[in-house]
Length: 386
Image (tube, rainbow, N blue to C red; front, side):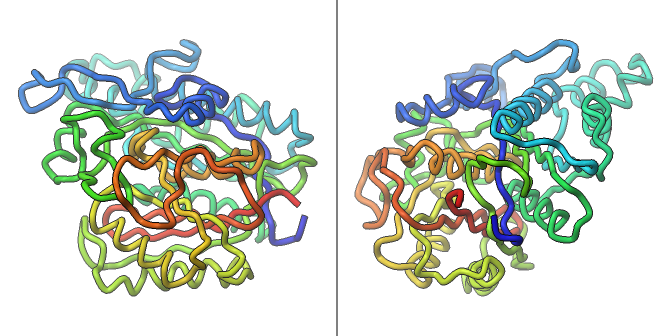
């Protein structure tokens, strides 16, 4: 492995498909969306909407919430998976946790029901640093532990931060987790009011990234974990480099000039030390909104060849907010390992480079872009294992 490359050596997932990596991959492969029709939504809680929600599960000893149990389950699965692939943890294993809205169910309970009746230990469990601290204790890890938050780009941001730690020699390995289980009625309602979350029809019909008639995305939830290291014998994929920037333009909208988005793609290729001609796939943010689709399609056409395949898995997994780009990185890494990209089948006329369902993986690299709400731009370059 080249000294600048970092292996994605283990993967763990908890998604709307279920608790575990293989359920996730099987659902994607079958082309089924992960959403179910959930009641209790809308302004008066009388509506049913499609949400790719994480079901109850996990170990009750990991805490009272789906959030804490999913975070730990994904991380444990990634660590066990990495061990099966030849990883041995070094002396300094760090933990990064990408989280935008943590423990929403417990905080809601705290403010509206329990208030001062909460025990001090239960209150401390609500702090963003507590899940990381207790997880470090479980495994005896002693590297740095911290949270990262960059809206929908948090997964990419965490991956690049982990690589920066490794490049700087601060750690020997990193366990990275992205957790977002925030698809509550209140949160989904406000995304509907923002005009981006569509809840009135099946996800594959309304979420059509880079296709005619797309009206946004269904809400999703996920916890996704990676073990990142240069010391495993059989990594899924290699993180070659990337870049991050910020539009500094608007709280929700992409700057229509695309100056910072364009610069982020250029800087990512430079940082990874690869030419644009080496990119075979563009795993897009692809939420199915007009401005994001336009921005990423423009980058595809400006930077890459007409043979570069474009896809987004949001019609299948939903928009998992703070865990979104981590879910999508997992798709790329597992695609290299399994030999095909489980892209959704288009349902309407669309971009000519859009992949049409399950596609065998050819030679070449992948760019994973994520344009987080508020102007968070990020691009990661990922390649197959050497």
